[in-house]
Length: 184
Image (cartoon, rainbow, N blue to C red):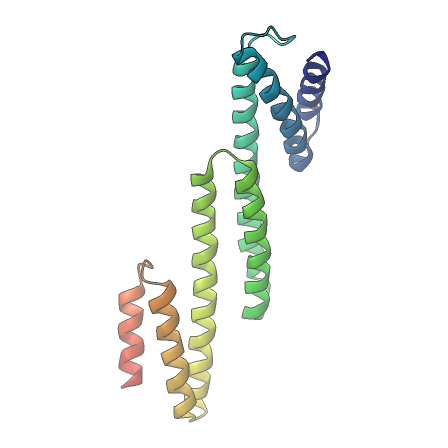
């Protein structure tokens, strides 16, 4: 128990001293793990070297979760910003998929899954819009080249993407109606 208390204290101290969010999160993970074990002893009525281990665990967990959420939000903003410099939709979608993997890790480490879910929905919406926009651009290009069968097929694919992924998008109905008019 003494060793756990020393590890928790050391990790907390190191977390307070580092500026790197990932390093800080890793140190707080260690502190949470050690405090969790001490809180279990405390819950069984066993005196531990840490005063109020449960309370310290709750505070440290909350600090770690807040840092994870802040880091995830910053990563999301940075990821979405980088998309504008990428020319190809496939490249953008691959980059977004890499960020979704990061979100899975953030969710695993964080107690507040609802906030991570909000970021996940934002990423899904962005991916949907990229896929839809790419399909519409291809359809319009085919239309300009007088390839009406190709254009029709691409517009139908755009509708399928919308119906599968975009029903919650505020512009769904308006865009869908515009595509249907073009198909006629």
